[in-house]
Length: 551
Image 1 (spheres, helix red, strand yellow):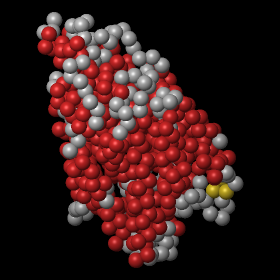
Image 2: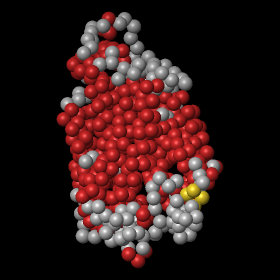
Image 3: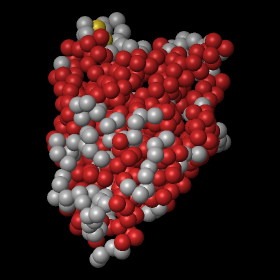
């Protein structure tokens, strides 16, 4: 099919708009966009990871059984639901909002995700019920919809930031948005520390083995509620600015086909001048191939981008199996090396404090630095190398922890079997922390960046949503599976209500294998550094159909 002269003119004008955008200097609006989109990710991480600091508190408050003579714990099915339901909502939100971002525009649905996060964060803290089952049921209901809103932020924030950026610094800008997740994880643990300290000072209680009843203050119920509700604050603070953001020029020019508006929007926010007459002077013009309109389920998409989508999805899946399971059962690792005493030796609020403190230390020395090292280097050494070395060192660290587990952990102390003596606990924690560093200076960042670059504009948000949803499927496997898998293999030593598992040592081996699989699937993902989005996605007809991005 041959286009009319007017269509060709529009196409050339649109091409010049996007070329100008690719060459635009880094300006204040880029950094403003990072903050606006990044605060969404701050909230995402805060909401998803705050549960790990108070999961044991919920067990003490709602499931204490005096006959067992030990602190209450969440039953297996409740623990799996509380930990995993938000991830299920996130997966659904990634698919829905990824599709909606391409169908209706990035801007039109971007504010909806924040509204969901604000109201469901507050509602989670107000979970109600006449029984423990009722409270947990309403909590899970609200956390599912919280996850749904969080899920929408993944494809929309990544796509918007990549489409605003110039090609020279695009990786750093998209990575900086995602790096706010590190501050969200850190803040969730810090708020848990502050709240538990305040309530412990006001309602000081003895350890469980001193007084099982008084060790859990009824007022501790406010701690987890306030922790969840505080998650609404950063989202609310940026809502106004998010709805004021203009639609991306790439969506307006390539999908809405309104190049004049794209040029005006770009001039307004990026302070660049676009000469609409420039491209009309081009003498040689080409017709647009009909293949430019291929769909997601077409043979043409499979030929051009199918392998890339598989690579993005599988790498993100494998990464999240390891990343989320590590975050959710790190409190058990800390207990295994003696960083957190036996639950019987603490009050409920002291346990929250100690879990939060351990998570802050790991976040400060490994999680947060890893994100920002990626931001600093991603446009220099490239996404592919960062992802490959990240998976490699994560695998190596996990294998070291697995095969030297007992030497590093030590053996149960003769006088106190809840502690371990003779090991090298500092080395254990250091190696364990390195897995978080290389996750973030590695695939946790790059699996977010690359899907926002590889695919055509009309499918970019959808494909990012699919890749992200594959990741959350891995997170669900980690959240549900490793709650059971990390239980002791010795009968009687597992948490109440759980069957025996494979233990932490073998769980670490499984995670090493998943990281290794991610390493090899990285070879399906091309390098995107320094290339325009239109070149990578094949949005224009003069991009050679057979030209694939190279490593």
